[in-house]
Image (cartoon, rainbow, N blue to C red; front, side, top):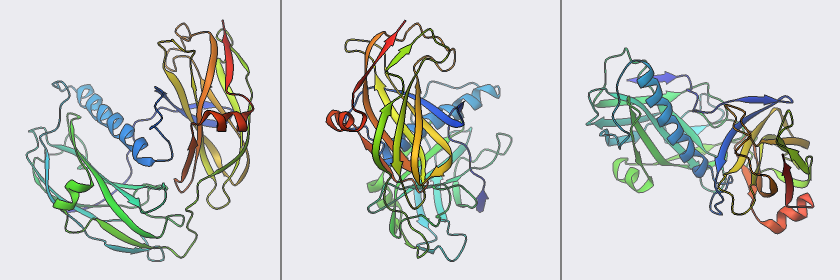
Length: 334
């Protein structure tokens, strides 16, 4: 069974401001959390997608037990396209997966993630057996190939890094939103080969964006203003695919129980060289309630950017932040 599918949207909520689309996440300070490693970002999206599936299942009138590991098990697999060339389209991985043991509700989706040897890029593909009205699949063998996805999704593109790409992660979801994950060591035991050799003689982009300057636009933020947001201007360049998104993470005063806030800002047109304004909305994005936002001196915890090819750069070093922004703090007032 070969499925050529359209791409599902992983769970993100969009918010518009000054022609910039943004997605919000609250994070706690953790030096190991770096946007430069797509594996960290993908794990967060995997968990969010499980919640999205579970919500859709309950919203369709079904009952669901508390989340747990799915009983679905992958019993084998094969990469059907061990070599791809960007000059021969579609340059999309085709993957075969055998599974069994799924609950009576059946399988929901299978996601596979590939990573190149040296860059921060990634590519994922997926299998989706269609809607809840389809007969549940509790076991079987499926082959899938996603064609027509955007950068990083479904198929390689002109910016993809040439060389070896390795299947490092597989996630199998059931219809109730539970999932089971498989890492590189697990997959090596289930797949006879876990790599794809990609030939790209077009326009590969293997370098992340370069920051040259930054400026705090809001040294003081009032909680009672019409837009209580921290703003920064980032000067950066990426002369191949162009900058697609930026982020600045800010943290509340020491001793506060509030979380740090980080927004990913997506530009409407890739930036090869220039300025990008990045805003962190400090209040609750769903209710716009600002009562829990602590007053006082907030700290710029880190900054980052990704290009269209999904190469990312980030920095959480206080000395580097001071050198780039000229400060590491701003104030929040009532």
